[in-house]
Each structure stands twice: as structure tokens, then as C-alpha cells.
Image 1 (spheres, rainbow, N blue to C red):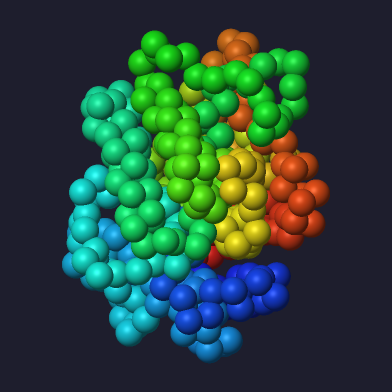
Image 2 (cartoon, rainbow, N blue to C red):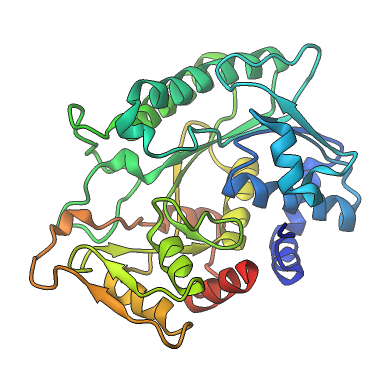
Length: 343
């Protein structure tokens, strides 16, 4: 059993959000996808804000398996102000419940479904979003934050250093593995349409790559895989030449950005959330390796040039300009904090 994020991270978040969190006082918040990486950070932040600022925020978390979540993370669920409700995002019901704020982070947890069962992936995202928006209309919810993805932009052209929110491209509609990205695009359309038709405030966060406690180390996240290799004293292996560029934001900065967008973001507008500090997969592997003496980095195809369209970097000037955002935690410190958590 692992316990929560470090107290220094909680204090850092609270210092940066203290002037805004008062808007959530005495409110009821619904979080879908609350059992995932982002959801756990959001729950723990709200619990800490309640403790230190006496905000009396009541949080409802939708989960398909509340018992399993409670067994794994009792420090998040054993609070009177947290209510874990069993249900499917596509058809759950809350009779008589009113939610002032909704954070919609639910998506199908297994990324493999993007290939093995793309229709299920699509249903969870599109039907789930439509169902949630109908509930928001009935509840007259004040503000809804939809967590989308940088995947909606498709491949990054060689001519740009990072995706801007007004980038006009998109994923290949007919390509295998496009279900997640195309479904997120459709869910964004639903959010914008409901915002206009029902006068709902729905800002959209297009999330990129993150690192920190609670990040799964055994899925499709390169940085998680590298840290996992180090913790198990295995050499880090890169299947390509390691040249594609990525960027990683630490989760405490992520929470500050997400909650600020929830409370201050313009309805029907998208904001990129992530770091714009690019690093190649190869350099990332060596950065992680330096924390683990004795392991090596193995590049399996050093002489095969990788398509530069595999880069995945956001342009974050819009969010920085509108909210005066900063990235307070360096990649080095972010990796170190994640390693300490899992150790």
C-alpha cells in the first residue's frame, strides 16, 4: 500500500491556488475518472484544501469498482467529505444530487482498447460525455472542466515546434488506433455545443504528458516505463533511435493549471496543459538512468531515422498569457519525486 503525495507538493499547490479555492467553498464537486492518475491528484488536493482552509467541499467520485479503489487507496476514500459511487460513465444515475462543479476526466483505462476494441473506447468517451452533459443541464452545474488530450491534433508537422490551440490538423480518421483521438474530438464538440445551447460554462483542457506519484509505470508512458526499469535494476531499452521529442509536466503544476482552468477558463475554449520544454526520448532515457547507477540505456535501432512527426509538444502561451502560469517543478525534480514515491 502506498500513501499520498508529499506534503511539500500539497503546500506548493495550495500556495499557488489559495486565492482561487475560495470559489469552491461549500460546493459539491463530481469527478469522473477520479480513480486515475489525474483524479487521485485532484482528490488529494481537495482533501488537503478542506483540511487547511476549512472549505467544506464535498466530492463525489464515480468509479466502476469502489471497493478495489478503497482497498488500494484508503487515505483518499476514508473521509466523510468523499463519496465513492459505483457506476458506468455511460449510464450512471444520481437521483436528487446537485453538483456545482464537474471535472470530467473519465476515459477507458486500458489504452490497448484503442486497437483491440475501438468501439468500446469510443462509447466510453462520446456516450459518457453526452450522458454527463445531460446531467449537468439538469443540475444547472456552474462550471464543467473537460479533460481532453493533445492527441486531438494528430501528427505534429515538421514546420512547428508545438501545437497551438487553433491548429487545424487532426488524426487520420481511417487509421487503426485513431478511436481515442477522434472520440476526444467529438467529445470536445459536444462540450462546445452544450455550452452554447444550454448556457453552460465548459472550458476544455487538452492534456499532454505528465509525471509524478500515482503515474502508472507499466503502461504506455515512456517516462513511467523508464523509471520502472530503473527501480527493477533493468537496462532501459529504446526500440527506435530515440529521436522523437516529448515534454513532461510535474503533476503538482498540472493540478494548479487544471483547477485554474476549471474556475477561470473561457467557456467553449481549449487550453493546452503540459510542458513546452522538449526532450528527446533518448535524452530522457539517459536522464532517468542517471538516478540508477549500474543500469544502461540500449538503443535497438540507432541508425534508423525516426519520423519527426512522432514529436508531441504543446504550445502553452495561451494558458501562460491568460492565467500567468509558470512551470515551477523541473524535469529533474519531477523524476526524483516520482522515484521517491515508488521506492
